[in-house]
Length: 236
Image (tube, rainbow, N blue to C red):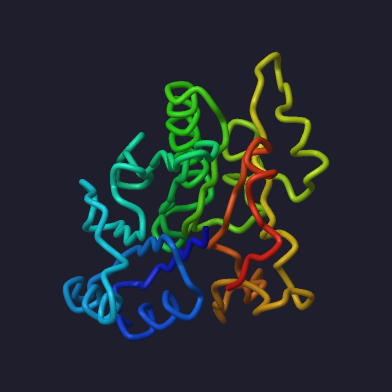
């Protein structure tokens, strides 16, 4: 299964979206801040045969899901303005919990505010994992935080590690509280050794501290989901 995530930043590149979905043989597209014309996009995608449909959501003003799967295979586990979690239940395959995140933007929210929101988002993920009875969770989205920021690495936040070996420990204990790990493969895509650009967002500001390339769009995987994923084939 191939997943496309794209924060369109309130633009409407329908032709580009349709071309990528077709050429990359995408099974599930998650569009953030999409303000295009869904009817026309679906017509482009289904011109030759009906393959894609809109997956209903209560937060379509922020997240749009286009899928080859019938919505009965993709039920909602959690929906809120910054986090949507869906159960991907395909016949004869282990169930996955697929989530998409839109973190508070860096322009209007400082590091502390984004860290606080990460606490709430992760709590919602853990509650959903408890309800579905497993932690085969994959999160994609615009976290509006680089991999090394507190919102991503703090134990009570996303707790997302750059090492599979460390993430494979499942969790860590801090002050007698246990926090499950995520594995964050985007660390290895940050910088000039990336197979693509050095990050997912370029900003040439006048601040004294500026790394220019930021990795705001990321993929996080629970250790239990690693055997079911091809994280090494990530492209951006």
